Image (cartoon, rainbow, N blue to C red):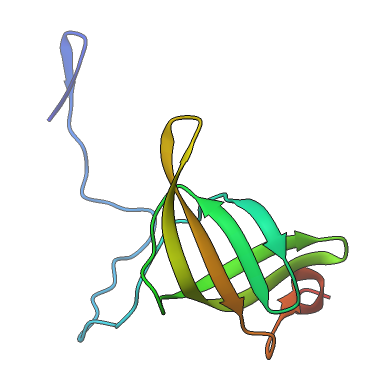
Length: 110
């Protein structure tokens, strides 16, 4: 029951969308997107200041706004070093970008 003022309103079991049940779980990982400060960027290397640490050899997906659209690259963490930025603990991440499959947002959605 949901109480509103002095009256009562019962809530139905209806939903706008149907429920689905997975027979077997799907493997996957989720990580929220984070903004970082780019220190250096070259063809296959990226150094950023991040609010969170990542482990060496961890695989990440990097999205970079470029003049011709959004470029997305798979990346591997080479190093992760703690640093202080204005008294806040941050991490300098050196990443190796996989240049084999970069694509821009414009190429995916013509």
